[in-house]
Image 1 (tube, each protein chain N blue to C red):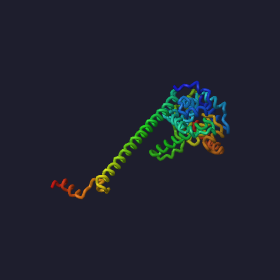
Image 2: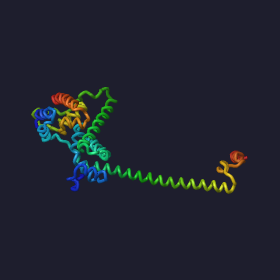
Image 3: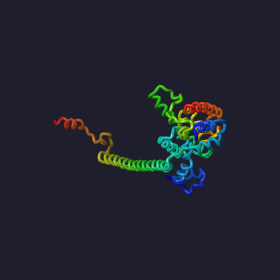
Image 4: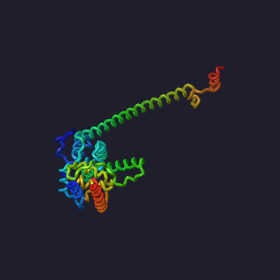
Length: 188
Length: 117
């Protein structure tokens, strides 16, 4: 396990970026340690809790490393990483949709049924499994908004900034996504 | 957490313009959290720096190849110049034929060699 190096535990993000650009792998390891949970929530929340999601998480940090020299510090590093994670994940969803469309006539926009074990209402269930499966059944353009609210706790303004969308669009998608989520949860 | 309570929390946390941090905290406490494997950071760092290492090796090989190519090219040009000078000294003039070692009887010689007559 890449441990938190004492040298960098107190360092701010810009210091870590500078050190990483000079080839200090411990500094970049610290960046990964700081933001891996955030990336995990995005990637696994959007794609499901699979080993493949972990590979995609690695891609996020590799892309971050390759674009570190372009980071000017105008936004928070977390916002910058979140943008990369969302873009990579949405591209992967599009790629999968294209792949699936080669084998079916579905346009992929309908809500997909995913098997979830029947449980009694009173029975305790795996909360993460329920949230993950419900999110997978929401259309991707609404899913990303729900994920950012539900798993990351982003405000509407932050979500709009990260996705590059007007606040009105985010609110409208949040509302429509919430309606989809209500229908999905009724069936689970 | 019971299923219905969980569903309520999910809907509650999605309602309103701003996030309901209390509902989100309850969801997290109920187990709605995600993480990568323990050695995730190590894997990422190893992937990045091993890729950089192989890039460095590639660049080293290419620059070595370039240097060797220049040396061979310069030696070849020097050899051609020496040949031209020696031809000029021995024959008093330069022509394409003399440069390639071709004489008047060249075609006949070739025919003799090819036909054996």
